[in-house]
Length: 323
Ligand code: ATP
Ligand code: MG
Image 1 (cartoon, rainbow, N blue to C red):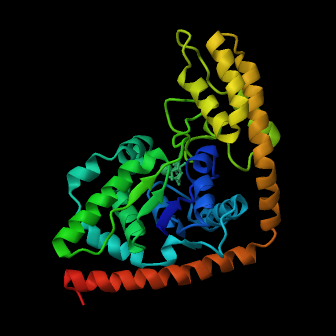
Image 2 (image 1 turned 45 degrees about the vertical axis):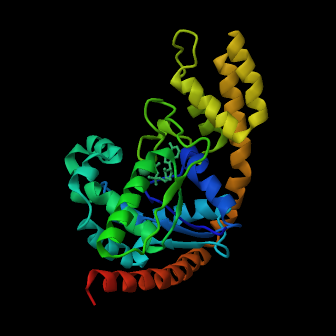
Image 3 (image 1 turned 90 degrees about the vertical axis):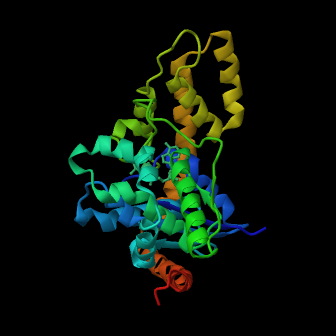
């Protein structure tokens, strides 16, 4: 069956291994079988402090990451959220049917308000409502995301149900689609997930050069806790397994015997990451020479997305009695 797939990423910084292994890698595979819509969610990125003059550049970098990873604009619709104003229009309508209590439960809101104590804005709080609008405008039934976004996709399902019940059925109940490595942890603090908006030492960016990758992986926290794998070591195993299942088996055996040397593990993790990033970075460099082409891809994508979004909004307006 052909599914309607929607997912997005924020232009908040360099993409990292978590974004790739948790989401982007599976987006690439889904494109051949399904209708895919991939959105650069710039309005979401405004919920944390940012420099307006940097936004356009970040959007372009994110588009480059996607294309270099294998997102194909011939197969998928790729566009910028703010180019399709129906996203914010539908979000307003969903605002009126979303209970405050549901938003207060959201882990991302709690974490980001903790990180940005000086700027706990209403947009950060209603972020999942805009995300529900992103997904449901395209009537997507599958949302390939990392584990941290599952709670938001579940809220999207509640919003769809509530809308359908109140105004009449029109939205599917979207489900999250996870990979085996749906949660990569920070290298410097394995209790936190790897995030773009944490500082450099926490993540390996897809654009990091060889030396940077080695330095960051060598510095990864790996303290042992009574013989069992510590969260930091489990994280290195998860990264290795996602990139190369065969290598990880030998290390598993050593870990069980108690002969595993973390420095050896780190060297192999770093080498494996470097060899995986190499072809990606080469493609990225080539694509980076044609920025005009990227702008055109995003404009064409928005034209396609807008047609679907406008049709959905027409239907919504009829249902809610606003003509
Ligand atoms: P930010 O810190 O700005 O929120 P982020 O790294 O969380 O950045 P997002 O743009 O919010 O990135 O999320 C993009 C996608 O990457 C989402 O599907 C999200 O679930 C996934 N993702 C983010 N971090 C991880 C991670 N550490 N492991 C697996 N998937 C992740
Ligand atoms: Mg995030």
